[in-house]
Image (cartoon, rainbow, N blue to C red; front, top):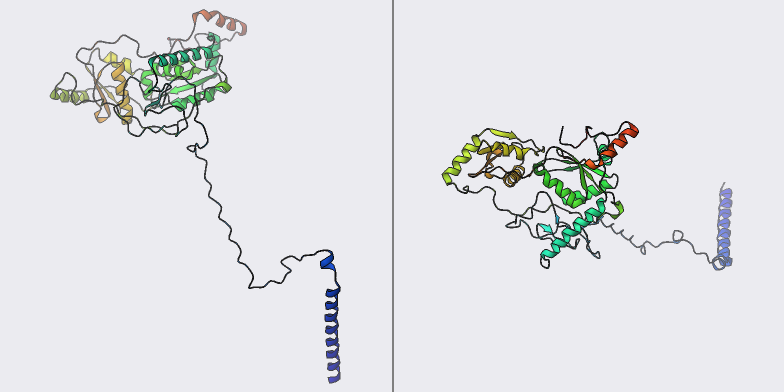
Length: 410
């Protein structure tokens, strides 16, 4: 047994010795490293734990920063050739009334350095107020008139007008521009031109305070867009772009980035009414609040018939009260200001969400047309033959007595 164990031990020792000798001779006689320039990868190289370097930390990814419209580095200001002053609202602001102060610094709502016009706190005039002259303003008005005539071209015939009005009805298209308490704003001009890319006419729905003076709304729409109103029924308008209008040649309209604060205007309600004492003014305010209401205004309604209603009431009464419950305070103050200028009348009080107005001592009913009727006549008598031709050819032409006619008769 001992002899057998000793033999196995000798065999193991001799085998390990031969393996070691063969490995040393093979390494010495091998030409793989020099012939093929073999470089073992770092994973096969013996690594010394002392020489291992700590792994480099990955740099954190910078946070995403969205592009800012206020960053105008390297960009030139926009140049718009529109021949009128840029205002936030063209129907709810007047150039005749001068503000007595500003509520904020003269920060341009178009963004710093984004427009080549100076912001005065109220508007961005097309003529520099420091270097302009009355002759320049007349030149601008002439440019505006010439541009509008060039875009409009020949007037529409009755058949063409009625066909366009038919396309803009609610059962035909859902495209519509809403005109609310701010009136015709500057950014709304861009919306109208965007709609004109897809159709020749656009439907505009007017609601709220601006509808008190629909004549001003229609005038400003045609003046600022160079279009033409071809249909009007209450607060619903259809604005035609013109025969020579080209969407790719539309004017550059820089957008306002925020709504500027309204400037400070003189007070609407004075402590005492002109020609009355303090006691008489207080007594008139009490009587006015106790007076039966002429009408109740709905929120975001159509107020186009308010001015003639007040004029008719002043023929028999000296005080008129209008119920404005549910309306915002700024809304019925604007309504009172419009009534003061259009009727005309004297504002008494705005207490308890009411508008109380006085006709004055020497009231004379106004005969000039400050307001429009419910429907406007747009048909031309010279084009009646065109309508009859369309009717006779198809047998189903749009006649003047259609439901969408714009005549005075209902």
